[in-house]
Image 1 (tube, rainbow, N blue to C red):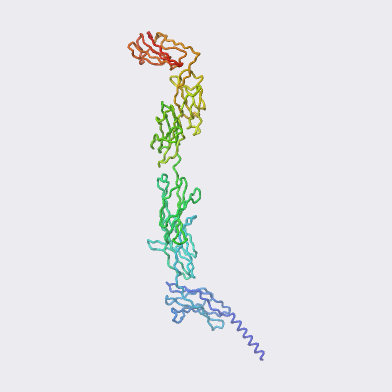
Image 2 (cartoon, rainbow, N blue to C red):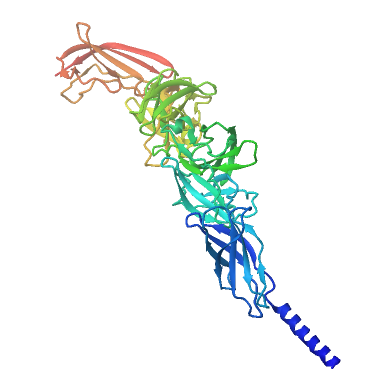
Amino acid sequence: MNTLKKNIIVFCLSISLSFSLLALTNPVILQRACLDKVTGVVTLYIKPSSDPCNSFKFYRIFGRDDSFNLFQQLGQTSTLNTNTINVSLPNKKKWQLYISSFYSCNGIDTLNSNKIWIDDVAPSAIEPDSVSVNMLTQLIFGGWTTPSDADIMGYSLFKVDPVSGSNSVIDEKNVLTYTFVTTTFNSTTSGNKLAIAAFDSCRNGGIISAYHSPILLSVSTPTNYRCQKKINLNWTPYVGWNTDSNYLFIFDLTLNKCIQCVRLSGSTINYTYSLPYLNTTFAFMVRSKRTGKNITSSSNIVSSYVPDFPKPITKTTLSQVSVEFPSQIQAIGNWETGDSATLYVRQQGAGIWSNIISYNKALNSFTYNDITHNSDYTIAEFLLVRYNSCGNAADSSALHNNILLTEGANKKINWNTYNGWTKEGIPYTYNIEKWNGSTWNTIGNTTAQTFPLNGTGYGVTKYRVTAKPNNPSKTEWSHSNEIQVDLGYDSSAYDTTLIPSGFTPDGINPIFKMSNPAISPGEAIMQIYNRWGELIFKGDALTGWDGKSQDQPVQEGLYIYIIEAKYRNKREVSRGTINLIR
């Protein structure tokens, strides 16, 4: 019997021990209590216990609104597997709470949770570190530092309107940086004012920070920027902290690189930038540094295309430099309509240019006769410079010069190169021309700067050289000065002067003229006088007189003639009377 009793006791103890290990023996863990201050309902967040022996009946919630008061029952729930329990409070004071679990497996004992106070403490106030503009996306983003509070669930982001005093909630995120869409904050406009506040797991929100506003940069291009080579930058200061330095970054988007960084004081909000060149797109950005901190904020990036003056339709050109009048040099040129131009001249080889004439914007071409350089013994160089509306030299012509013709040894003529067309790549030829008494005749052409006159005639003869482009469509030319060269006389020609004693203007001998094979046109001059000593005719003796004076026939009778001939290095004068018969 004793043995049987012992076995029954051991069995009962083992059954009891088995039930106690599996019973509702652990209380719930009360994690936090959050009060809705509007409704007075407190939400309890718990970690429930398991109930393997099915002994659970209900939870009872107890609380007190002062540590000196006794706990009172506030509510009850029969839901075991729940994470939250809601209870209405008699007042909105800060309550201390705990939960009793009914029952343990023996159906008698209760298990009490830990005691906690309602969490009504707001997180610490925080400020944004900075509000800036992303260089790549140009979207505004903000950043801030985690406060020291242990229970931070996230951050409320506000758009601030200082005029109305309203703070509009943009979003609530548990992040330390946030990028805003353009419809919320646009980096190219004003009014980008951001404030933040932290909130905890009970949605207790901290104090809303003062607003921060990023830098807003604007660029204005003066209408005369091509002249000044400057552009104006203005920006709003960063709002939210003090700035000790501003850094202005300048980018060349054509080169795709930053070409300059200018450090400015923290109080600077405008800057005039001197453009290093034109015909490119510059981009500008300002970055402000917080006083005493390594925190910065960037502005929006503003780009500006600054074209130079457009290329002229009309190239600045000297079309020709030529000797058209004795001792003068004529220059003809043209340039872009609407701009001014100045013609410069200097003696060849001299270093100093002289401004001989300027033309205003109403003109775009000119013909100018320079009398400051004698074309008979001087080579002058001419340069036409165009000036834009800024008064700056924009472009210029090639350098042109006159052709100076001189007599060389052994009956040769020499001249200098006409440089203007050479520098413009226009091929041309020199024509050698001889005066025949009434017109110029071409007697040869060459691309050299010398020409022999042997075989071109005898006596004292006048010559010039004309440069002409080889292209038939080119109508320009350049005449040299004129020179006289004595080529001697033709010893094979008879030197016999024949002068008739009479002539009949209306008969078979209508012209009174001299004859001598050794005399060339222009080498003998005839003068005719009437009986009263009046000069009624003067002309070439080889061409002769037709018996008229001032285009009217004279009366028949005797007239006096004087013929002066200069040829073969000698001078011969013949005098006599001629009988005019009608």
